[in-house]
Amino acid sequence: MSTPKYKHLSFEDRCVIHEFLDRGFNFTHIAHRLGKDRTTISYEVRKHRFLRGNAKPNRPCCFESKPPYVCNACPKLLYCRKQKYSYDHSVAHNEYKQTLIIQRSHLYITKEQIASINDIIAPLMIYKNHSINQVYASHPNLLPFSKSTFYKYIDLNIFRVRNIDLQRKVRYQFKKEQLSPRPKTNLKIKVNRFYSDFKDYLEYHPNASIVEMDTVIGTSGGKGGKCMLTLLFRQFNFMLIYLLPYKQNVYVTEVFQHLKSVLGIDEFKRLFEVILTDNGSEFMDPDSIEIDINTGEKVTSLFYCDPNCSWQKGSIEKNHEYIRYILPKGTSFASLSQEDCYLIASHINSVPRLSLNNISPYEASFYFIGENNLEKFHIKKIEYDDIDLSIRLLKK
Image (cartoon, rainbow, N blue to C red; front, side, top):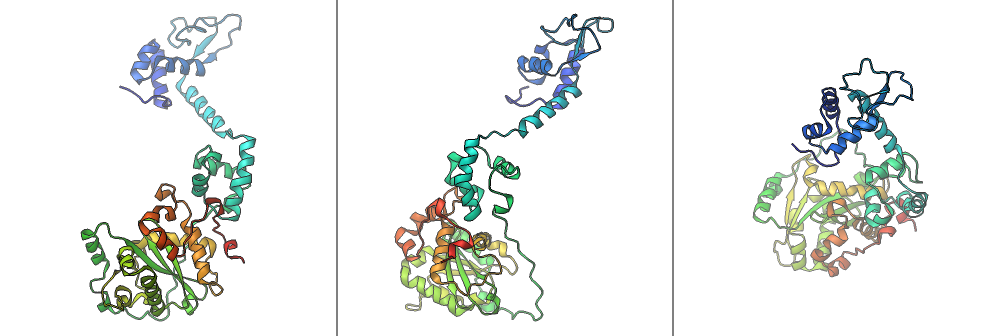
C-alpha cells in the first residue's frame, strides 16, 4: 500500500500510530502499515509527545533521545520514577489542527508587494471595474499567490480594494405579470426555424459560425426608447453592439442591411452562417435578415430558442453583464450614440476571459473575423490596463 508523498497524516493514521506504539512495534512496522516513510512516523511522535506525571527534571526519560521516544509500551511504566513521554492520537491531532490554524493565519506577502498592488492593481479594480481574473491575466508577476488567497487578503483589508469594489453578479428580477397578454407569435414564420431545427442543422454543420442575437433595453426601452441590439460570436465571446432608436423589427433589419453592405455578401455568409435568437417581437421578420434584397439569395439561417428558455443562448445573456457594469440596470440610453456603442464593445471585447485561456475575445477572434472586418465593425483592441468597465467610460 502506498500513500502520496507529503500528504498530511489523518486522524485515523494517528490512531494506528498510537495503537502500534502501545503494542511495542517499531517505526518501520508502523510506516509499512501506513505506507509512509519511517522518518515521517519518527517526526510525528517526537513533535506531539508529551510528559506524563510530575517526575523531576533531573531524572530524564529513558527514551528521551532514542526510539521510540515515548514510554507507551515500556513494561516499567507503572512504577518508573523517571520522566515519562507518551503519544496519544487525540492530543496529537488537536495540536496538528491548532498548528494549521496558526500557519494559515499568517500573511505571506511583503510590504513592498502590498504597495505595488495598491499602486497598480487597486485603481484598475476600484475605478475601472476590472475583475480579479482580468488583473491576474494582465499582471501575473505582481500577484504571486492564488486567487482564493487574493480574496482572503481583500477580506482582511490588506489592500485598498474592498469587497464592494469587486465585480458583482448582475441581479435579475422576476418579470411582473403583464395585465394584458402578449400578442401571440405567428408560428408559421417559425416553421423550420425552431430550436430543434437548430440542433439538426448543427449535426450536419458542426463547425458552423454561430451568432447569438438579443436586445438590451434602458429605462424607457420597453416604452419605445432607445435600446441595443447585441450580436455575439459564440465561439469567441466576441460581441457587436448596435443602437436602435426603437425596439422594432424594422430597425433590426436596417442593422443587417448595413452589415451585408459593409462586409460584402460572401463575408457576411461566412461570419453569420447561423443566427440564434429569442421570440421577441423585434425578431419576427426572419426573411429580412436571411435574404439578400438584391439577389433574393438566402445568406444566413435564423433560428428561435424555445419560449422561456434564454439559457439556450446563455453566452450572450452572460455577456450582457459587461454592459451592465458600464450601464447599470435603470440607466437611460437616450444620450447614447452609435460611437458610444463601438467604444463599449471595444472595451468589453478586450477583457481577458478565463474561458478563453486568459486571452480576450478580440485576440481569440482576430484571425477568424479578420483585421479588415474588425475595422468595419469599428472594434479596437484596448490595452489591459486601459480597459474601463465603469460609467466613467462614457463621460465626455
